[in-house]
Amino acid sequence: MPDYTHVIDGLRGRRIVLGVSGGIAAYKSAELTRALGHMGVDVHVVLTEAGARFVTPLTFQALSGNRAWSGFLDEKMEDGMPHIRLGRGMDAILVAPASADFIARLAAGLASDLLSTLCLARDCPLFVAPAMNRQMWENPATQRNVATLQSDGVTILGPAVGEQACGETGPGRMLEPEVLCEELNAFFTPKLLAGRKVVLTAGPTFEAVDPVRGITNASSGKMGYALAAACARAGSEVVLVSGPVALPVPVGVRRIEVTSALQMRDGVFAAVMGVDVFIAVAAVADYRPAEPAVHKIKKSGAAIHLELVPNPDILAEVAALPEAPFCVGFAAESRDLDTFAEEKRRAKRLPMLVGNLIGDGLGGDENTVVIYDEEGRHPLPRAPKTFIARQIVERIARLLPTK
Ligand code: PMT
Image (cartoon, rainbow, N blue to C red):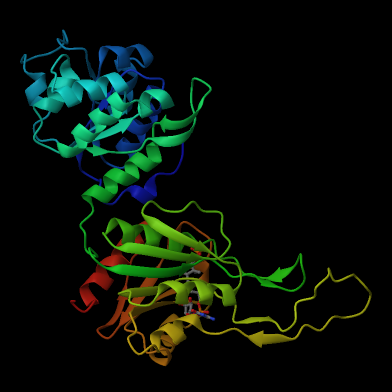
């Protein structure tokens, strides 16, 4: 089971109807049900007759802990009005997978089964995640129907491009459960940074010693990526200048991939002019080899002396710009966090800095941080980096000068 904890914050306590229409991707809806449940969402599954042929209502019932409905007149129905009652008090309806046939029915406003009736009688936002063969998706009839739904205010999520169950390749794959959760989460997250532009750095840098070796550190990029995702969810335009890490690009984020500190500086200066916020999460190497060897250094019995020269301080340079953005620094220390973190904040003239001890923050999924700003120190309890990121965004939004 993938880890979905990073998409938890806007979804906890929500009530969502998950509609499942007929398609092989219905098996992914079982995982989606479970993932939403893990995030504290109260999931109510409604299947079309075709959907129930792919995965039984019993499966969804077991995974959601709620009765799963199917067809039109479910014999277990108590008050005879599930098409109205089920939709009331819901925060959203998500149809995943949505087949070409179901999309056509939605676009025509048909009420031919419980799910389509529920969608027609809804008083909450409707999300549709198409899943079908690529030619069915590209067919003008489907495209017309999708355009109709969009103009009716329905949000279309996906489809993804890739290998299909039929063996063909192209657009039409249902988005992965994790991405669907993230999309819903973004919808429900308050837009604290709407209209703002944010640039971040994340991960380590790698300073070449020779063509195969280099100086780097253990930063995983998790803190920076969580923060980039939280900024995007909060409504800002986000550019993430990232050192070498093994993490996917967060939804709504543009990534510039770099290796060395000098490349990171170029990436930042290509993106930072005119932005509102710059957040330096990267663990940038302070020094680089003065002259990396052109060829692989051969082993010998003799000692090797490596001459290191200082790298530019990217954060200090951005903070010193005449029209500098709101700059947030990070500091990873092995001791005396308060003293060293405040020293760094003042030396670089930053309105805000996030301090963490190396043992707490480097590499893992959780962190314990203290935020330092002009109002003092604000310790946050240990939590997943995604939660910490959300709280940092809230603090930035509070301190950011109004436009
Ligand atoms: O990536 P993870 O595994 O999730 O770990 C997260 C983290 C521990 C790397 C992160 O939370 C963190 O603390 N990042 C800052 C690391 C650090 O110690 O930075 P520093 O003290 O060397 O630099 C202070 C600040 O200046 C940082 O914002 C840094 O990005 C920036 N800096 C430093 C040197 C340099 N040449 N250019 C910079 O921009």
